[in-house]
Image 1 (cartoon, one colour):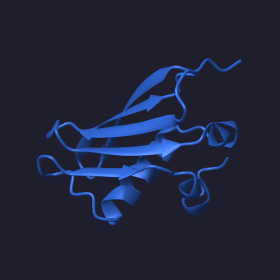
Image 2 (tube, helix red, strand yellow; image 1 turned 135 degrees about the horizontal axis):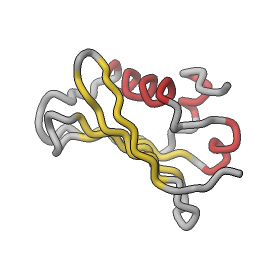
Image 3 (cartoon, helix red, strand yellow; image 1 turned 90 degrees about the vertical axis):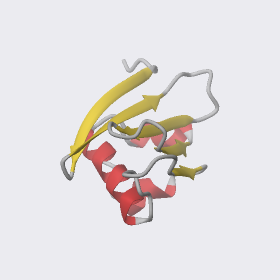
Length: 102
C-alpha cells in the first residue's frame, strides 16, 4: 500500500547537489515536484502533475528525478544563478516524452 506524503530526495547531477521535494499530499489538487539546487536556495524548478500520472509513474525514483532536472536544464533553467525559476503547470506530457513509465 502506498502512502501519499512529501518525500525529499537528494540528487547529484553534473557535480551539483539538488534537493527534490515530491508532494503527494491527498488534499492537494495535483502532485508537485519541486527542485532546489543546494548552492542557490532562491532558484527552483516546479512541475505539477495530475494524480492520474501517479498511478503509472513513480516520481520519487532517482532516475525520474534526474530526468526531470536534466530536461529543465536542457530547456533553459539556469540553476547556477539566483532567482531563476522554471514552472510547468501541467507536466503530464513529460512522462511519455522522458519515458518515465516503468
